[in-house]
Image (cartoon, rainbow, N blue to C red; front, side, top):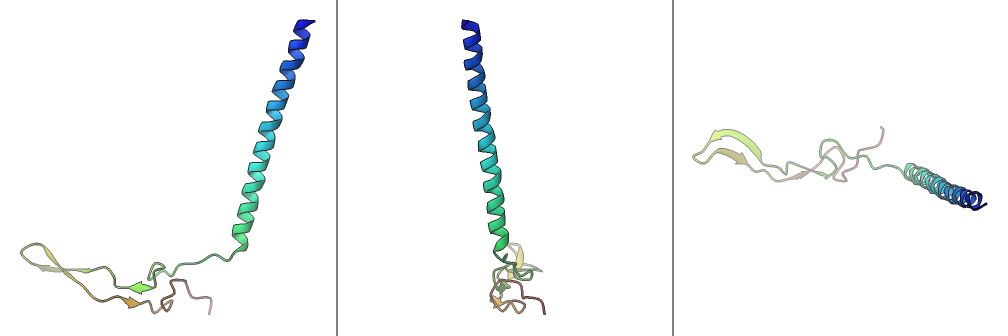
Length: 95
């Protein structure tokens, strides 16, 4: 009698644990899908390739082959706005 009661209580605990694990997994899966759906609904921002989404070109110094006493010369030029995106950093739409 005691063994049967322990067996029933043990089975109930295992079933309760299994149900909570299954429910947690289902909620996580459905929440992940809802987040993906929300993300897909918003239009993605596509970065401009020439300026890498910054809107500026020529910010890095240009390495030249002129050797000075300390190393190779770096030529600095002022940054200019990207002509492809007009300085917005997003890729232009289809034309």
